[in-house]
Length: 255
Image (cartoon, rainbow, N blue to C red; front, side):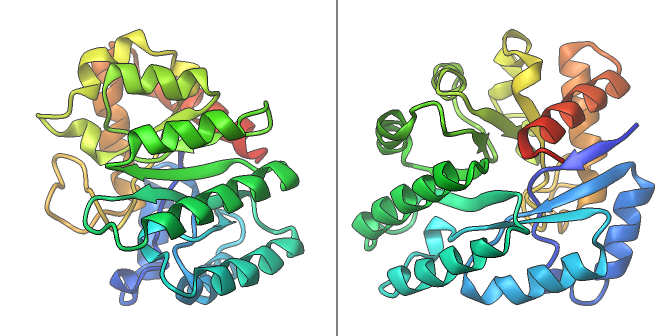
């Protein structure tokens, strides 16, 4: 069995004491590839350092996470756009909209998101998209920008069946992580009606650890629990789920 964690932040400071061991545990748990989306200007160096240390089992993306869009966002985006010129990045991410805590920079978030969508189209790269409390605005922008050139993952999807169908119709994949294993997550109810060829797996480590590790710091090795839960819901062998989702991830990111 071979799994791909399509969204993990193991360069985060929460792994500073056992980062090497975290990677080793992932490999021992059949997570053979870990995709690292960027967060802000400060995370680029540690992310690239981790990739340099483990080039065979990590890949990197470049983007400005919506919660990190501040007054200086245009300068940060300019720096990131230049960084993308080195052609080592497999995707544009983590990007998106997040209006859960604060609407102070709503206008800036919208502008930053559109800018990064344009990068993805220009560079023919997939996106890792974060959306929280912003579905209507998100879809409006995606519908405007989608000309066949946008592809990617709706990261940490926990929405309704109708929302899932909208994203799928727009050409995106759904990233399913630890939340899918939680008792109150409604995605399990309609998961059997979704096309498995548009599903990928993720952890969002160090956040959102799956059952039975909920409450702990999340890490890529825990992806096996999410995979097993989804396989159980779909009533298929976990090896089949792993094969399909890994193939989906490889095709999307051209790994």
